[in-house]
Image (cartoon, rainbow, N blue to C red; front, side, top):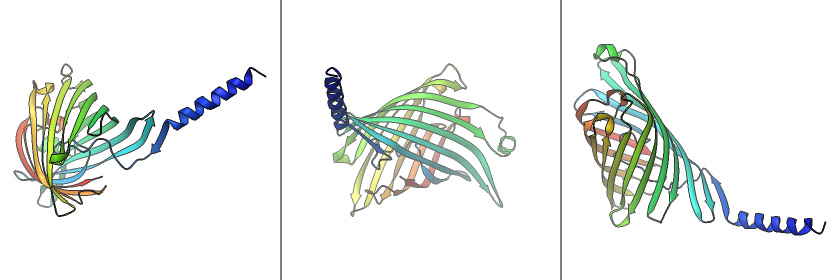
Length: 266
């Protein structure tokens, strides 16, 4: 009995110390990582019109922080995100769903400093033709899949109301091609406030893809955000994109696209 009492006392003290240095918060509102505006496959709800064709891009997605953990002043945020990306071709009297891509990501984010954050990514992307578009438009069925991990860093630039970021991806399963595994991405955005709740911004995003012999996809976007400081935001933006396609089943094609879109960020 004399030996048990000190043990229980020490166990109580260690549990008390642990509880004081451990905090769990479910479904936090504030995100550690901010959105990459110009990235075509950033998780989003959006509708964009392609100027040079009858194509529309309609995306339905969400990125939800599931929980925050603080352990001995070390912060970790775990998030789940998924988006369905659709290409819709509008012709008189008919709407055709041309491509459908599915993206699922799990994020593990931490703050290194107040301005610098790091992220580990585990994700899956699969891309598909839809309806009868593969026959009418002269395409053949293609199985495009990427399972990947990634590391990302993001640094806030408060004087510019923006940020820079860099991400490296490794595709541990990809088809096709099976022997090309890496993608590198970097980007930047900056903004200026008009009135109290309106923010104009400019952003770019560049990806270097081994699957197209280190070719690039370059995206440039300019727009306005309202209300800029709320959790739910609306964006109206013009996008200029050039280089290799972001749609997986068309990854080997190069094009130049200009579009105008409405985005809902949350």
